[in-house]
Structures are given as structure tokens and as C-alpha cells.
Length: 201
Image 1: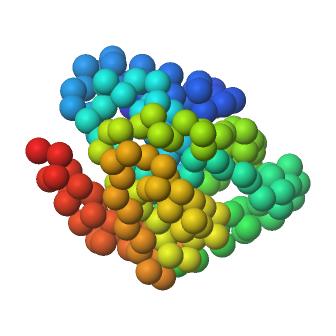
Image 2: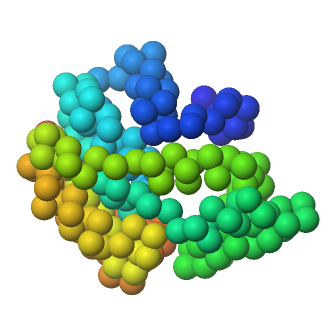
């Protein structure tokens, strides 16, 4: 499915609904030996998948996420008050990518415009309601936890908590990286993923 096709679909209003969408996508394609990888809200979906349908997964990779995701009020407000033609929202949104390579900025900006503040608000509210802190002990799948050392949205203590409370988790903190560690330090992140995948064979 293309990105634009996904954009035409209605956003889900909670992590549980996103979980079922992802599961349907995987099931329809008959994927086997699935290792699910999620960043931020995607990590919440991955955690819930591991809790609800562990037999369908071989392992999980969690990046810049947490067992509980509380969203700062200013991030919600920027979506509610986006300014003329969403200009204020876009300018604030793009500040999150200031450490990402310059040549990626135009693509990120275009994707943001295509998504818009209403969808971001929807997803942030879904994240704000997410909490599986007391359920992590049920997850015994192999898990890789990745976090940027300078991530202020989902800080290192979130990654620490995930690693400490899941039965089979390994943590890597990437120094100097922020919330979008997978774009800022993609070579290091890709190597961590490759090493984790190799360990599952």
C-alpha cells in the first residue's frame, strides 16, 4: 500500500484500533516469522501486539517509545491552533527534525503537509491514553529497545523501564541522538537492527 493510499484512509482513534489495522495488514499478506518494529506511537502498537498476539511474532524492536506515552500540552495545542494555512503548526513540527540531514528536510516537510495537524492531534491523543506499564512482565519475546540519548519526548528512562520490566529485552542508547534517532543516526540504528535480527536466527 502506498503512503498516499494510507493517507486516504481514516485515522484510528486509539492504539487498539491501530493494532488491529496492522494485524490485518500482516495477516492479509500471510507474513510469517514477523519481527515488528515501531517508533514512538508505532512502538505502542508493537507493545500491544506483543501483549495480545505474541504467538504471531518472532521478536519486537522498540525505538523512541515507552510503556506509557504522555503528550506535552503544548504539542496538543499546536495542533489545535495551527495558524493560517497550518503555517505555525508546520514550523513547530519541523523543529523536531533539526538534527536530521538537510537533504531529507523537504521530503519530511511535504509528508507533514500531506498528513496535517488534525491527524497529528488524533494520534497524539491516542498516545496520551496509552498505558501498559503494569503489563510489560507478560512480554517474553526477544526485544530490542533503542533510544536517543537526548530524546526529550520519550527519554532514556522510558527505555530503561521497558528493558527492566520485559523478560527478554536488550537496550541500546545512541549518544547525541534525539527522538528521531532512526533518521539522525540511521547507520548505527540499522546496525543494531541487523545484529538483533541475526541473533534471532
